[in-house]
Image (tube, rainbow, N blue to C red):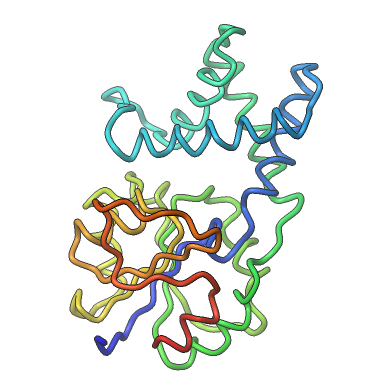
Length: 235
């Protein structure tokens, strides 16, 4: 096992239960559109949303040249695509994204073991948080998963200008880490952004897989865990 100096934790669905908060935020979008919210509809949106971001990360969704705010463009585009039958214009889609974003922080809960894991590891490693999450919510989310304050760095896609797994994003990671790539371990739940990003950029990875999903042959995480505290034992 490498002697890691830096642990890079993804936030959404790694440290924070993001799925529950997304459903609540989406229910507010449905209310605005006067479409009755059901659990089935919420699940359909989560499935669509996951696929949308996977398609973007794999290059199937392109950002037009000259787009200044790529994050707002993408997050609004998903509502245009999900509600394709409504033929939403750009301004309405942006409004729906604003409603959704404003309610994402209404109900946030830490993933089981998140607080304890960070508390155990914070004095032994440099901790950074590379995330594709919404910039305005990142600090709020981190406050929820920390029992006591410690020094850390945040690498936010909205600031970098690219999402994981883009090489530009990981150049920012390397700048913050100030160590050799071999001394960094990236921990995350997403195969397409965290694991693939680590693989493409020469970083060891730990796949957080609490739902015991099957692992496709194209992904080769360095290690796999189904509970965050398991990481403290493996290290």
